[in-house]
Length: 272
Image (cartoon, rainbow, N blue to C red):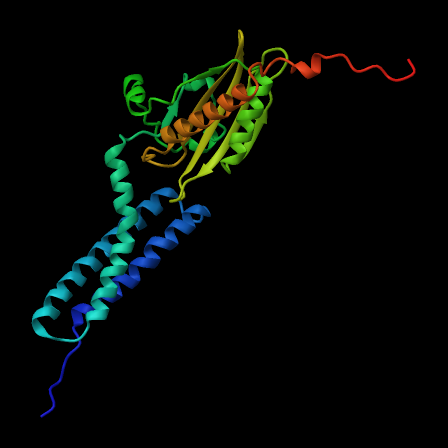
């Protein structure tokens, strides 16, 4: 007598749900990057993707338990469904951790925000007001997101800031060098995060007695929570700027003064 070994229907559904979760996670992110869907629609689709991914993992676990006791076929289908579901849940877990680590905030600045205007403000007519931190919370959570002052002239410091901004790969939308009359230099740049949220970074270089200072603002355009990206961006940039300026001063103790070679008179020309 031939014994019929069935393929578990639960395992089949686990693989189907896992296969469905992949495009539900990937396609909305790509469309959000390309502005083919708006942010509210993106959030709705991602919640659906989260539900399908979690369901795929749940069904896969149930399938594996049933297969253990029933002896049916479908182990590979159940395992593939579990693997695909966990892969799709990974980014949700990562951003869930960031949401737990950082409080809801969408705008971080080292000075009053009115001093660092954003270019995307006309795009935010239908957006809710920015979510801000108190000065005490900002100093505690992002201690390095502060104004920097260096013994360099504004033009020289602006060149370093400009180089670092370009190295970040940001989309520079406005670049104004410091003027001789004391007008600060400014840089406005757009940034697109991995999930497709738009953010803007604003940098200002201002001449001060004996040097120049750098202030920065980073704000989200269409995100309800920045998951720490704005504060971390300012901290990372300021630390990188500290390192650049430290290296410059170390290699040239008087970076705003001409080097000794520049002060030496030119050698006389033969025959004079």
